Length: 289
Image (cartoon, rainbow, N blue to C red; front, side, top):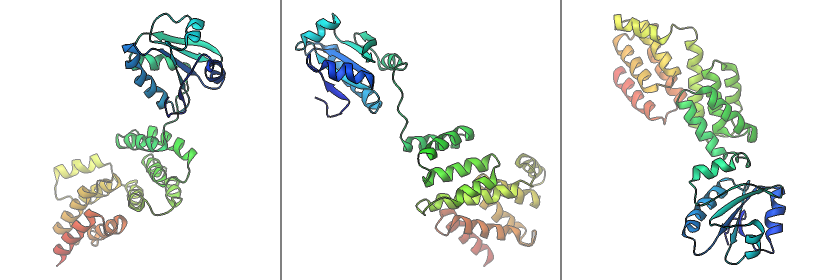
């Protein structure tokens, strides 16, 4: 007998209650097997894995055909293994013989509702989508997650990043302001930094145009500074900090000491413990003194 509540053995006496009556509430997959049947033994763990994956949306009933002859005769089972899906008191689908997992899932798909993925899986999927540039897809996953738990700090921060990426900066700010606690302080600081610099790039030339200017004139200080702001908005912190420090070393008086002031602003936004802050604060200090 399985310890999982939705996987169980049934007998002639319990079949009506455990299979027929249960099938009015959840689909019940019935596995007809026997001890001597090697394909049955191979199929069992696969069926259990599938049932467990449905998290209670599918029940798995096991019938030992060597013992429960009444059920075998009732349903005319002639070969083993035989698997029958019951729904609303009736057999609705099934198969005979060992089948691959993909075929079994395809058989179940029209009859069994897929379980909602756990929140952790939704968040991880959203992170993958965000990292690959699929901002809209990430946002939809996060909306689903936040609909179930609107206090999930990590999801709120990533959701704010999605909003910021598509230009909804005020809405993103409001979401960040609503993030509870300080468990995800580093992520929150990074998101606020991104938002700060996204506001600034709105009035700047495109990054591609700035790169073209620098290709023609590596000493174009304005283009170098504005490109660093673009990089900060894209969270390319190391590249941006390196560019700002080089600009400071090349032209300390540029725009009333703006490269140094921006470096200090980034330090404040990222926090004193950030590895890049530690490295570039030291380099800036060495350049100054």
